[in-house]
Length: 133
Length: 247
Image (tube, rainbow over all chains, first blue to last red; front, side):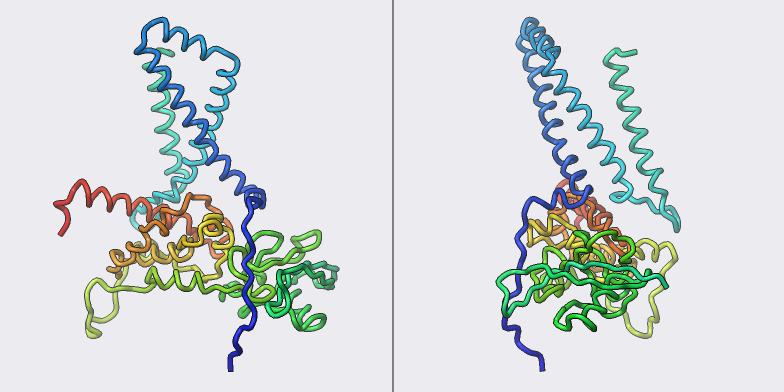
């Protein structure tokens, strides 16, 4: 006959140490953390648009502000985090959108590769319209 | 045969006498080919018969011997002692209440599994005379990977979302729901969506991906969950932007 459990099961508390338990959790948190820089950069763009609508002097002051060392450090960090986010995200796309052609699935590299190719084409288009070439 | 000495540090908890768990050390001499489960069996047979843990098949099929080995969710029957140089820390699976020693209470997972209806729900009643269902190899391949789940719960122990948000239905149950949704014989997706597309369902997942990394059967629950997210999003757009599609 089954015995009644006389004691209480013990639930171990969760602490934030899980982030450091394995590098995968840290990589995940860096990816999540990247949103602060991407969000910050978006606000910077909005501020730029606002200064543009406020007239030439305001816009030139904004451009001057962009050249400050703190601003450059922020932009480099934002670029690094945006690249990290995009690369890790595109590498995950084969999981989210597998494509079955006939019996077999398209190789992961083809799906991730298509995203990287689209990214490159769009980035080149932006640079072209910005007059970089 | 070469023998080596292994130190195990095992988390012990006796619900009748302990207020909280504590670690206990065992020294075991073992041959090169032993897995952690062999060492635990040796401890139980020769050193300490009070040590409790679950196991059955010893060949990564039954899914009973999941535990934390050096902080990683692993099957004890598939984890070789020789891969661990120092003291090996063995703890019960994280995020589940400890019943005793390495034995956890899996009730939450079992209840969630039942909620997603992980079985075939035929599109329409089919008389026995109609014979067996037929499937092409492509239709089989569409869901086969997700059938390999052995309900070992390693993915729940790896998933920080499940640890932080206990309501979350979790990787294995959601990927089993996906397995049946992808099956050409099945017509139960609508019923499952009530759980799968709920707040506690796929939308609680933030794609840490740990579930897929620790899965001993390479089921890739993270993939199943992201695919279910996309399908649920398509459902939403169809319902709100193309209401005429509704039957």
